[in-house]
Image (cartoon, rainbow, N blue to C red; front, top):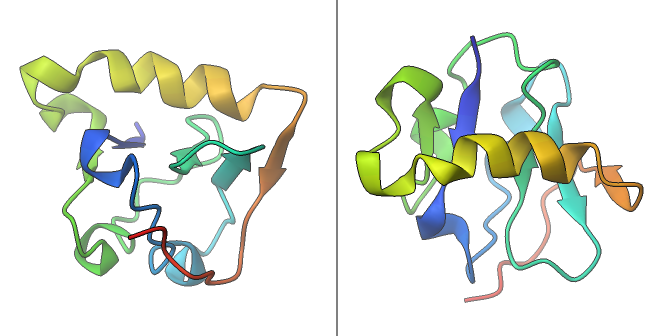
Amino acid sequence: MTHVVTKPCDGCRYTDCVVVCPVECFYEVGEDKMIYIHPDECIDCEACVPECPVEAIFHEDDVPEDMQDYTQMNADKCEDENAECITEKKDPLC
């Protein structure tokens, strides 16, 4: 199982969640305006969920219906050749 970063992160890109991740499964891709969770690296610990100030992180089974496409987006973006693991807090976009 995994967690998924969804639409509320787009344009904000808070990174409070990455500093609590014990397995470093958060990625950013170039100039994208959000971050992503690698589904094969996430251990489903839920440490990131309460840290997200915009409530953008959901367990994959609980992703709202209108944001289901973010599950595959997270997987695809983490496999992008320009994807870089992010482990430190950065300034948000908003």
